[in-house]
Length: 352
Image (tube, rainbow, N blue to C red; front, side, top):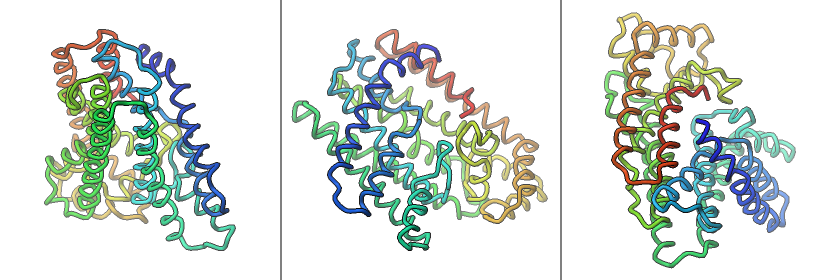
């Protein structure tokens, strides 16, 4: 990952500077105390420490097809994916009721504390404000695109692509929520892989790489055969870390996926290969918000004993191999190709 990290370091300061400009400009326009709280929280979350992988994938996608370094307009457009990411995470944390993100309070949790000072004691108020904060972030995407000095047809393509990625990601969110209350015996592996494609692979990998390709004059699916399997592998690894990861490293709790009853490849495999006793434990604990740490640990043990963890790890490696094979068929800048290979390998090894 050395070349990939060096690439991020090369542009990170500029990307963060643009994000800061966007957030501070909007914050400066606010003239009432309540919106001031929400916009300050938007700025905090948007600028909080994160990997910034998505905007840099836009830059790589562009450089891969053009062989040229990104100019100011390409850098500006790349930040739309970080804003999109922030908006989706803001809503996702409301849906999942998670209180911690990147080792800091989630948007709704932070706003809950702020609005308590004004007498708002209902958690519904915090959720409502966070949804509105996410909607505001979403609107900033279009404002940023509008600021770029691009030909009309290209700007139209960019807007269309961002809109489709937004819609399909939310389609994946619908499936994810629906599967959480679907009986385990009715959940299929394809159901789960579809969520992974919609909710992660398209918006975290194919979308930003495709946006870079469009900015460079290529089709939005130029990188698809690489990006989709890499994205699926990324989500599988994310699900593993969501249960077995160290919260101090991942910045997220290690029991929320179990307590929310998330249907992951791990859960699907364990259910289909577990004993009747193990299935009974899964049915009892998954989705139980009051589950004890002992019960959560029992689920972890079942994910190991049934071979679910091993299966998930091997499946992720298989998708990475598929992605790297597809990459060899692309005519792109050699430096970018090497970084994308590094990224694929890192995905199945990362611990956060």
